Length: 517
Image (tube, rainbow, N blue to C red):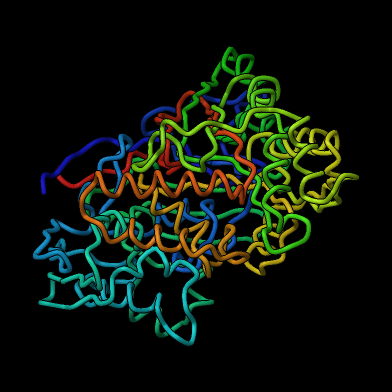
């Protein structure tokens, strides 16, 4: 495998709050540190961390801290290329066996050695029958990690799986000794990794503090300290960025982007992302167990108006699928549900609800750009055709727990993505029966399950693409979600923070190096 390199400099998604020590001059105006003057970068995010154990994270915002403190065997460049990290190489020995060679001489922050046993432990713990990981489905095509020697492992799959390299790019390495001594709950709030930053503290709802690892195997990071602070209120995040008390914020409102970019000391960045917003529907509850009702909901929502009027054009209407063009398996010929309120009313009557229906609509408040404004607009559109939606807004931590508890409403706003750049990551995570999130906990469609499984085990890319196209057509007809839009992310940063926004939301404000760089 060739070694590629690039400088990963990006946004950060996670936190922030009150003050940056030394960031303001005597007049209260923010200073503009540069070079060696930068002692820390504070990243503001709408939500706090829920766990720092990568095996038990179910939301992308938790991955951002893992990115700084833990390492995987492979990693994505900003362009989406898969390159080595803790692995030196990977080779397919057969259709069902892969050999991975590991970097030598790497140690965890607590002094433990990284080796083949580490890889085996990091994988095996996900499948503990007494405490199975909610993320195990990402890796369950692999049935065994076999230790060959201290720095070589073989990955064994039950059936051919062309995505093994991409899968293990999501498997963070954890130290067996530390984990077994302290247990999962302790690790979730006190992580130890091999990464470029060492975890120092997590004060819930206030801050996560990380400090540069001077012994990082690819070189000590240039920024000594990274602080994530959760600031749920958008106007507060914006104000603190303007005063220089925080240095980076995501989810800038489109209407603020132009003015913010014209202010001294601030840069604004935007990028198309791999994330698609959809309104997940419960197919196990009345009346949304009726496909005609779910289709009516899709006709009732004016997606073009939401993108153009609420998001000022920062987004792209999804053509009735939950992945965008960046993913392998995207169906370019599928057509979006047009906005047709009359057709929505006809379908409700055909479903046996000529007088309309009552449904519960849940949304997070502040997790995604203008999520509450979008939810409020959708509520009005649904009500207009007789779908009387009762909207309830939740703080993200509560909302994420509702998802884990399988206690969501009839309609639920989410923005989903998967960094494998492949339809499998999203389709399996959202629609395979029995998974813990998405629609999967609430329904089972045999053909959907069959296609998802086939897509995981077929090597030929043309055949795989045809599988995902058929799956997309079924999902459009079944309408287990209201298909909304592919999301654009807008960031505001102080001008001394150099980064390039990435489509996979992976945060990097220090320039994480790659093998061979």
